[in-house]
Length: 107
Length: 146
Image: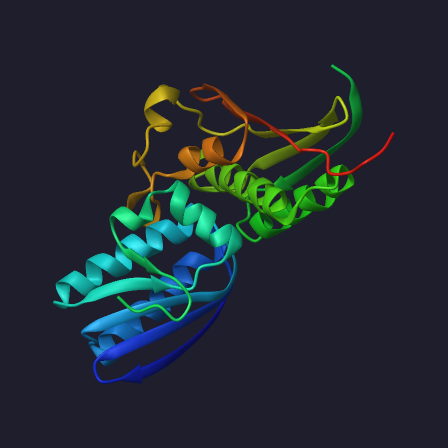
């Protein structure tokens, strides 16, 4: 997993790249938790445009990030999921919990 | 049922093998000339089934996982993921959306995703003996001849 970030005016964008499976999820969640604790953002965008693969381990990660952002009094959404990643989000019903925005989309 | 081709892979329940198992499944399925979307579905289903073995079947040790792939009747991929781990009493409960015994690192959506991405899903399990997950996915023919 590759993780990079951009921060501006209370919004932290976390770019995830690679394959988010059970093997990668624990370390990825640890990195995201550290980023949220460091920036304490009001808004967090998870940018999935670089994600080539995700399974239900990624769904669990999204749920945890969503919970952490609620604790911080902020919110999270997902940006730019493509192909396989989008199909997994749809099959798991993630949009009922977290907003999923299209390319260039905001809220 | 006409078996055109098959492979069997045995590997330890090491989480590093999740990526290997789904890549192997995709490589084997390539002979059916699947679309990218179909390949993604196959990789996802295999990843979910293999992850279940690694997380649930062998919670405190490394055990053996077997991935068998077969091509049936020219156009159907048959996927079997088997373990000899702890097994389950209640398969129906395990298959319910959001049900998990895996804590916050698991979503409870693994079987739901397997069901969404395959045509048929069967799960057999016996406490103390292990679990076998069987899935089939038809790959539609695209302009193939003969």
